[in-house]
Each structure stands twice: as structure tokens, then as C-alpha cells.
Length: 410
Ligand SMILES: Cc1cc2nc3c(=O)[nH]c(=O)nc-3n(C[C@H](O)[C@H](O)[C@H](O)COP(=O)(O)OP(=O)(O)OC[C@H]3O[C@@H](n4cnc5c(N)ncnc54)[C@H](O)[C@@H]3O)c2cc1C
Image (spheres, protein in one colour):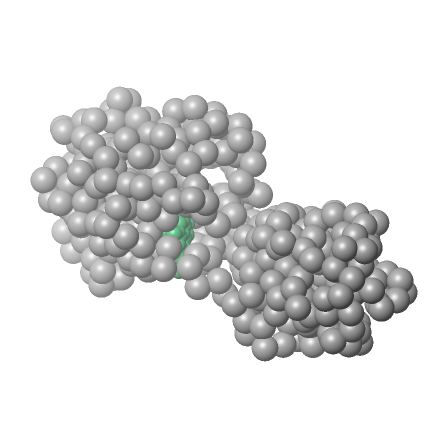
């Protein structure tokens, strides 16, 4: 079998792999660059990302603030974000002819609302720049040829050598195994960004009901988050829940996804909720309770369900409702306990927590501290973020930093 040599071999044709390849070649045309992809097609995750729209990045333009969205990688990404972050991502894509737009919740998408714009952009650039893409070539073996300072890579069908090896294989157990054989450590992978499965009469038949600014916490832990909550067919979802699933990924896996969830639907104290209820009792004297919710963020449907759960007749006039009933309502609204049993996948975005141990990486170059000329970017590392475009940002930032390290030091 003939062995082909490249200056730069990239293992994995996903977001991080393409961004690394394109930026390396743009900065140094003399380098031969090749992407090896296990699948028949490249960029498959980009294609399905963001519900097919690809949430490219997030409108947060302060590096320190941006790191707060990363349960794993927060400290390590601060330096790299000073080199390349969200604003640079926007500029990069716009310069390549992919206009982007910022949505109301600060997520950034292609103006086309299609991930295909990103894929077309990458494929056109690799073609123009002369980057080779070899699909159906899953890497099976990585050997370091110490004498020649080269890496030797084997797939099912071919053998390659390269000066610089970049691993961008995402959350791949076989590739993590190859890397542990090379002396690297892998933090065991667990799912992140999932929704909580809860069966409870309060939630039954209310899928689609959303509540803004809810406080969600996990009993007996320090895990707490705020934000919108969405009731689903299976339980609860929405940013507040997804954030908690990311920050609690390891702890919740240890609990085998069985835990008590406390929801404060109003994000205020019980006394503050009571004040609103007593005010309604004084002012809405002749109205019946179920006519409207006295809380702006609680819809009429959900309010009726609270009345039902607290066994309060919705036909009761505000003037006639007992203080005890209002106490009960305030209690339930500010402290509902649910038993979560299992998790479901959040269809728009999911990632894996875990990957190559960050202490083993020099983040000035995203290079292995164990082996020179071995680089990593994207989800292969123990870095992941909450939902909102931050996971791709990690791939772009890593790819950019690796490209600088390789292109200007070869
Ligand atoms: C449904 C879904 C939607 C998402 N939406 C968003 C979103 O909108 N915004 C966001 O920021 N994040 C999103 N994410 C997360 C984001 O897709 C990932 O963080 C990102 O794709 C990671 O990029 P990567 O290049 O590291 O890995 P990947 O994109 O997973 O690419 C790795 C590539 O390596 C290949 N590979 C694996 N093993 C080998 C091997 N042995 N040899 C050769 N090739 C190999 C794989 O086939 C794959 O093509 C979403 C994830 C999912 C699953």
C-alpha cells in the first residue's frame, strides 16, 4: 500500500475540521492539507444543527462573559477567545459571502435560515484552495514515527504520513481510544443539553406552554438556573432546563437521571407572590379566579391548572377566596417539587460532556503537551457549552488557533 504524505492531516470532516483546514491553507498556500472523514458525507452535524438553520454563534462580544456559557472549558477558552471569538466568526462568514442575522435571543444564524449556506461556503472554499477531502476513510491507527518526526495514519484502505496531525473527530469513542494509546487521558463522556422527563398532573396536557423567567434547581445540589421553561409532552425543556442539564451533566448522570427538581414559576419569594394574590383579592373582588391569571408570566391555562392542583374552585370570586387557599397557591407557584425520571434529547442541539483532558493541552496553540505537532479542536476536547451557538464557537475558535499555530510555524 503506497503511503501518501501531507503537511497537514485533519481527522474528521466536521465544523472544527473544515474551519482548521480552510484557515490553515488560506494563511499558508504552500502547505498540503487533507481532511480524512469516516462517513460518506462531510459536515453532517452542521447540516442538522439548529433545527436545520445552524446556530453559528452567539451575540456575546465580551470574552470573559462568553466563557460563562461553558460548563467545561470556561477557564481554558478565555485566552483563545481573545484571539478569535464571536465577532470574528461573524466577520469571517460575512466576508466569505454568508450574511448572518442576530435573533431576539442573541442566537446568530445565516440570513438564509439554512445550514446549507455554511456547508456550501466550506465546500466552495476547500475546492478553491485545493484542500483534499477523502470520505469513507475512518482513521484506525495513529503512530508516531519518532525518528522522522512524522505521524503515520492508517484507514481501512490507505496509509498516510503528515508533519502536523489535527484531531477534530468530535465525540468519537474509537478516536478517544487511539488517543489514550498515545498517552492522553479522556474524561468519560456523558450527555449534556437534555430535557427532564417528568410525569406530573401539573404538567399533563399542557405541552407548548412556556413561562418566562423561571428558577429551576436540583434538590440537595448547588445546581440552579433561571430563564424560560417550556412544558413538553415528556416533562420540561427550555433554556432554564437545558442550562441546568449542561452544568449538571456529570452530577445528573451519577444520579442516573433520577432527582428532585424544584421550580419557582415566578422567580420571586413566596411573600412577593402572596402580595400579588392579596392585591387581586382586594381589587378584583367580583371577578372569578379562573377569568385571568394575576401573574403576567403565567398563562390562563397554566393558572387554571394551578387552581385545580390546589383544589380551588375556579368559579370562586376573588372576594370569597380564603387566605389559606392563597397561601397554598403562593407556595405551589414558588416551590413546585417534581420527580425527574430520565431524560430526553433536545432535538435542536445536543452535545457530549467529556473528552481529552484539558490539562494536557497548550491552549496557546490547541496543541498536545505530550506530543508536539498533535493538535485538537472542537468536541474531541472536554469542552462543551449550553445551547445557543456556543458549541460551534468552540469549534471555530479552536480551528482558528490551530491554523495560526501550523501556518506560521511550518
Ligand atoms: C442535532 C444537533 C444540533 C446542533 N446544533 C447546534 C447549533 O445550532 N449550534 C451549535 O453551536 N452547536 C450545535 N450542535 C453541536 C455542534 O454540532 C457540535 O458541537 C459541533 O458539530 C462539533 O464540531 P466537531 O467538528 O468537533 O465535531 P463533529 O461535527 O461531530 O465532526 C466530527 C467529524 O469527525 C468524523 N469522524 C469521527 N471519527 C472519525 C475517524 N475515526 N476518522 C475520520 N473521521 C472521523 C465524524 O464522522 C464527523 O464528521 C448541535 C449538535 C447536534 C447533534
